[in-house]
Image (cartoon, rainbow over all chains, first blue to last red; front, side, top):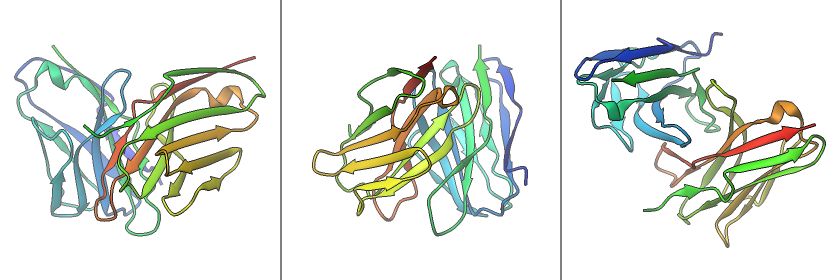
Length: 113
Length: 113
């Protein structure tokens, strides 16, 4: 299994531009998450999904949108990029039931200028 | 607001010594705690978890201790190795009916020869 994969690895955006961060997992996990990590800080939950067709807001959802049309994919959309969205974005997934271990992707480093 | 925090932002230890990383949490309703390790440029990696009905849990070279009386969590790493150098995060799940994890700000562990 490839686990959780994210693309792109790096991206620079201008203020007001939009982009989609891609996340895919091949472990058939129902639960998926998007976090952002600012320099020297812990992770903050943006959005999460408990299964295809179901999404919910986390701690810091403003400025982002998500969709979950398939079990494998959980893209994160930035519509009007702002400097405050400069961060490293991590996608994670976990299986239903049992332990709560989340498996993380390698991250996308986004800079908004 | 309520948060998960860490006492020491940086911990330096000599190779072979034991390391103790501490974490304070403020929500007495939290029922599940996880420690993650994050190496530079990578996503967080699960180390060990513990439920609130336990005081101690051991893994390979790692032990997590939970003191619910003072809302304190610690990660002990035995015989610390250079490969243990990373940032360590504690995270809590605040109730049984939520899937959200709240992360602390992290402690950097530096291992020197």
